[in-house]
Image 1 (cartoon, one colour):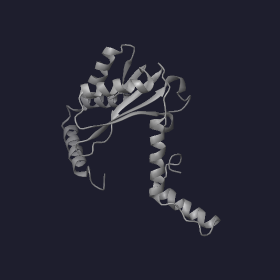
Image 2: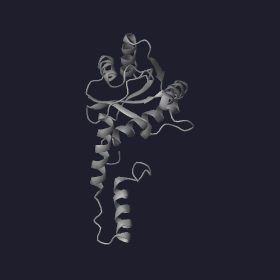
Image 3: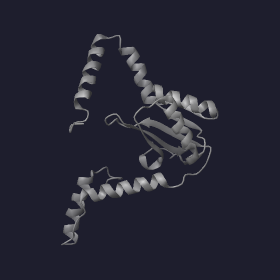
Image 4: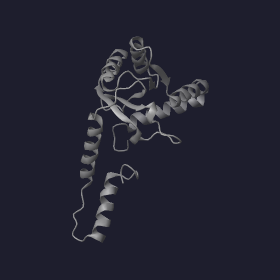
Length: 193
């Protein structure tokens, strides 16, 4: 229900309780924390399982949401030979390659993490990133040692940069962007986030 249906952990536990009571009186339904622990186990197993060493990997590299001073560098991968035909990628298509907590992310630390990840899959065919200074710089350092790897600019971020360049001359846009930044700071790290 959680992975395939998009239900929350609380919802999944409640549904099991409702259907379990109807079909098996006296059934003790699992708590939502039970589902969370199983999801963590599934994720850890996926992260630890050996990956094929191949030259057709594409890595997707980004930072997770920042919590305090720490953010995590996430590297997900998929082999070009395993791209699903006729549909967009889903989380179940991706392989977790690395998850690295970072307090200070620089191009050098990103490059070191990319180099370490080579042991998991071999040198990737391509790396997709959002061209943030640390990620793009890290990929460029990595490509210096591995010129067979291409860098792909994340289309969503590229489009956002082009739109921003076009709109930033408009005073209304500047004011709107300022209000968005203030709202984000006001909500981040609260229950509403």
